[in-house]
Image (cartoon, rainbow, N blue to C red; front, top):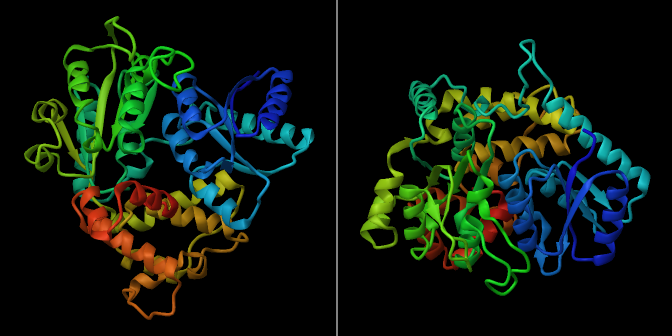
Length: 446
């Protein structure tokens, strides 16, 4: 790569300026953001190859930004920068999708090394195979290799519908791989060479969600300092994935319905009607039919989304796939983090088979990446697994010799796994949905 498109996210103006000057002097294209939300806006406008994200963004946590940037730009490499280094934050950063971790102050030679590593990784991920076809390092179908007949049928269905332009609704528990399935369908479709973009409906306010979808003009609301074309325009010819569509505010649903029906929309602050050729794939872990009955979701939108429904099974419903998936993920994270971990101990494999996996595939990924990050190139044994997971063999109860954090995590995972909706889980836990959303992010639960 001759140059990179780089996003610098830091609340310190001097750091942004210094990094910008350094990167531009090496021929790279640079954009800046000083906050969580301005970074999301920039990511909605520009396709970045690399992002430097400060751990502390004023009152906001830079770690929370990592998965959001990764959803928007799956190919993006993310480097966490901080003056407050610790093993715990390094592990958290890697678990959430960061590529590397730098401690301030950093030298020019260190930055040069990081850039070289990123460029090398990009080259490796796009190397041609024996047929001359580029190999995607994150094979979209790999999480769905399965010995389970129902899962094999599901993959065949996804291949059939991928060739069409039909709207698809993915249903299933959090962490079952709905985003990966949406990306796999996109890669198997005629739109594969066009953008695949993601919007997570619960993470944005009503106004920001509408702006991210359809765009806005400068000055259309407080904080709109420049025009934003929106994800629909940025996704022309490609696929737009609407994650957790059940949490989309009612006020935006008619505009989405109109776009699905007529491919027409207007940006905020503008009267011009625009058109776009974008395929919609939506996902939910809630019962949309029940939401329709309760008046929380439009019936006409539900039927428009429910053209083709694909129900993702939980990981517990695919017991024979757990160990092969774990081994595949171990190889992936070994390559990603430069490790040579040979495998799992007998005790870990037995625990994997017995564990209920309330967080499904996403939890399995997090558990294995955590083990890879903190392992000293020895096999992954039970001492490298999360404490709460090891305690799952015998359900936790008050008075057990474990930390309060482990009990809280165990309780939140159990309630989320048993509830049909995010709102129901928040009510049972006695906290508001925003607080539960933050806790989910902190614990890596999806």
